[in-house]
Image (tube, rainbow, N blue to C red):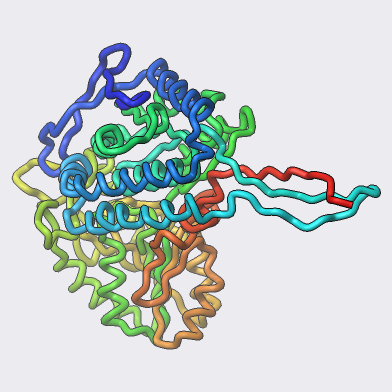
Length: 482
């Protein structure tokens, strides 16, 4: 763990093994935090937030964050290797998960000194008084950040970078499966930056509930920023309600990819396959539910069977691999159960639908297409979080396409395929999703908000709107000159 500027063992001395999901080998060990360790990390962050000039010295803060970015550039290859080893992330995905995310830090680093931290409003008269008003933005203080295993470096750097750029201190709790990516960031911060001790703290724990409960029930934490499942997000929101602490929650999705009858099917099927199977299908905003018009349904299935059946899977260190291992045995069993039940309920497996085998080691599931799924079935409603594309057929006009696409408790992302731009925009505007992608485009960027509708979350990351989530607004009134 990294607490108050130094690496330390857990107070009770516990450690646990970190395993490579591709071959089940042990790639490292991590300290096993208990509640007292979480309390120490929060205390360090609280002290740093309250006693240093981190919140107010914008020039110094920007300098430190640029040091962090430069250090991460130097250690990018290490960060990639760690992501492949502990998460099974295909090396091809690290171009997005690591390289792009390091470069995207520039956007938030720039906001440190360009954001309007104070804004004056003209005089306003009420109750016989002429008052000037100044709006002032201030950091919350201590951010409790909790990240998932599917994109550890990416989500870690989002939450650390955004917390620090806005002047907060942060306690980052990484997922039990992927603690090493956080350690890479902490090591760079310690060795290559002037970030004060206590501003960045990282904790790891074999049991996510023990550390998570300790963090989210600590009254010294002012804001919780979480990426993960709706069930855990709801628990965090309940804990944060005690003391009325702010939360930002990104909670997954079952994103619909609407294939309108005039779509370019070659592009739509290739792009749709890749946008579902990327990072082994272990992504919250991936296009995992394809909603296809009846007129082109059979043609789409023919293409999907060929494309998905031929996708490269296996060694995550091979740059040609799109689908790597599943994170752990329990998740593999969950994916297998969802697909098996779908077939039992009448859906059709076009390709895949079973475990892969690489010498009897690791956790593998073949790229899979589940066709003829009822729009209300489990496979069409549940977030699988694996290399499984579910295809739902619809008939009728674009109103029906929108209805089927919106038939979900989730609303994180959406996709529309059409050769008619205005038609695509009309559908995109009506999808209940926080981000929508038309044809060969993708929302992810540092300057555009990313968040969800429904049970996909509350609040946003990225852009000025995401920056604002980490800040409180204060209005100060003063007498206007007579």
